[in-house]
Image (cartoon, rainbow over all chains, first blue to last red; front, side, top):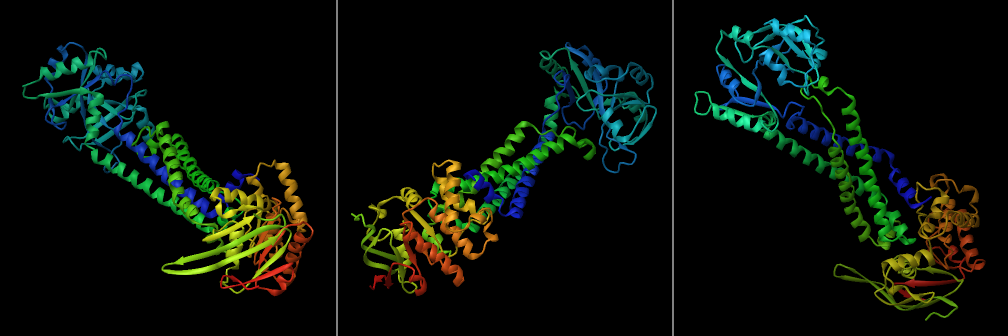
Length: 382
Length: 227
């Protein structure tokens, strides 16, 4: 036997308590990681190859306010723009969905859209079929997989924003974008259903180069300044972050819950270690009597506390990593989350929290050990 | 200074406990010599100060005043860390309630004090086996405490006290939790430690029969020596 072996034996002497304590730490760290992953997913916009080139143009008053379709003629003349297409969020309910459909439907101009989605891969014949048929649509691979769709299927959507319903035929399936969930159909089809109101939801613009993108943004804003429909043009990233900023309370809430989780974790670990030391009060006195010094007893307590917390971290954080890498989170959350990626930074956070808790939880028992003289300990024996 | 014959020399030793505003005198100006190889029994009623005296000699408690020289070292002057080292090298403890670590085997319990030394594994094994052999438990060395009888547990505790080869063995009511047969065995071992191995044994007991195993017996009452 050696001293580390002695520490391990002590830690495992009450197996049920050890298992429950490690499980508590593991469950808390699993929850902490899950919250961090969810927060990241909600607040971190997806970056693909074309995102730095894309510019979103919306009504300056509000995203809910439409833009005049006639703005297209002005946009087409602005230098530095490769292509521009309407992007009108339809927000319909797919058949069977009662409150929420996990994939968005966008009305676009098919001929102008593909250059905007630089990463999208779709067979040419499917693209041609989409361009040719005004009531057709293309659907992302994730949605196709989730709903078991195929080319030729007809999809019906009940309008929730617009006073009309859609009846679309799938003619193409795309993949390769950072978010292969969306459905795209003809803006002209939507216009016809609405009686040609002459409006679009937003414009999506592709700049010629990354360097030119800020200049193009500026030009677009200036082009419509003091017009009846002033616009706010911004990069896709700024647009998404602006969208997320409306969820500020969610960030605060998740941050708050994370702190509560850590605090609960601290209480669990402190309580466990205090119980473990109280249970061994007599033995610690004996160890002192036979020559163990305070620093050795401190090391026992610290090593056991640290070990317990790290076992919990391996189980909780490691478990989160394994689970979130092996399950289809998109399917599980009905498309609410796409990536749900556990990053090395999050793993580092979990293990740092565990290490810190291991040390903090050892402090109170170490004080008890330090304060207790051999005689005090021995008196509890008789 | 202690003479070569005296392993313990106590001069004017007093111990006063403060319990709130009340002061309780546990030891009152005690002077005592204990010869090397002696088997001394400390007797007296509860609260007479015999355990306190034993604790001070063993370096686990400090007096309020006076000197306590063990092998020429005034243990009252050592700091906490020095005392721990000193205890490890010079004192073997035997307690009434055995106090073996329940998750360790008899062998590992006996080995425990040696983990603080620089001895190699093989050397530790040799010493542990010798100590267990001495108390007649060589065949039980891989048993856990719960697999041993009370008498066997106390013999393991004696082996643990002896494994570092201390000059001084202190025992606080070592037979208090044992049946008469086991008590006889334990007392016999302590007696042979004194007679054959030349160890100095100091034992606290209430039992006159146990005290009869000692070479000398002293009585304490209200913190004072009565003989």
